[in-house]
Image 1 (cartoon, rainbow, N blue to C red):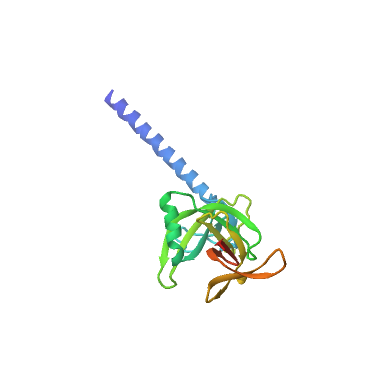
Image 2 (image 1 turned 30 degrees about the vertical axis):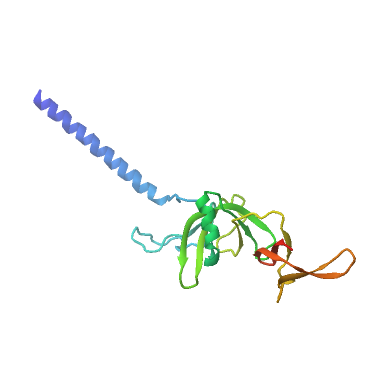
Length: 202
């Protein structure tokens, strides 16, 4: 009986060894098929057809650029950091909108990521916004203008920044009245954003 049990154990060991050989052969046959961990756009291939590929090669086969989602890096002056941090402390979402180079066509909008860093050489503050980019409106290395919404001001008059003048009486603008006469109005500035300035009073 002991001899028969030993023989059965020998046969079971042989079966396990054969299964291991089958699994090894299957894994070798799957090496030719590589599945990318992300989806995206494939750039120029780094290896031509017919070249020998080794596991120890320093260069990959190709480069896949992820499009969905896609991240946008942008910088803010350190003077605007308190406004951004105040909104973050409140837990309110910081909405980021991407525009094209001409600053006219709006791209997707997304809430900014809270990963940030401070650049001491340029005195700027770097932020990162991640966009879903479901329609592939954004492309890698594309230049975009980023609009960051941190506050909302109501009941402000918007004027071109070039209309704002400064003199001994302070900040003022010229305004045309109902009688077509031009008058000077001393104003208080609320916020300036590019070519537009908001006037809170005056």
